[in-house]
Length: 244
Image (tube, rainbow, N blue to C red; front, side, top):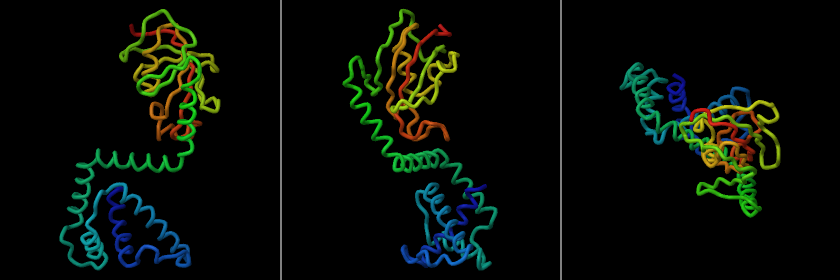
């Protein structure tokens, strides 16, 4: 189990941090390849420990490390130690995952803060444009064409045509450009879509301006045109409700 191995490696980092106070090591200490590798591994393990543990007893952490290195009698055998760590992760799996997600979100927000600010500025200005309506959640929309059919519910599946862009006009996805409508469940899409679709009647065409928190937030699809904290713009035509 990778996390068990990382927790054992982290003992080395903990020991090193006690022997060398923060700031004591400079780039001059990285004289060889193994020096650089050692420091890089320490950074990687340190980040893993911060992500996976709320608190560590450093004294016992170090004691376990030294018992193994010095081949002295450990107070817990190897198999029991692995079982204890695995049980910890099983017991705290949900809390650990939440902490990892929060940490990733903070890192993404720091890296893409300009992106988030641009989206907020765009939406703040857009709300004053003619015809723009805003829901309680912050979703903005313009009615391009009103429909006269039924409105979809969360239980329905719909058939739509759509054209999606970033706030600068960059197209990232478009069934219109592909020439083929798409079908999906009302709740199988981003929150802004789920809410927006339920405002529409069959035959309607709306333009949605979706805040990042109702879109993909910090976690868009990796490698795509949508970056973390991107506000999105969609023109959506509701062609049919398939499960009425």
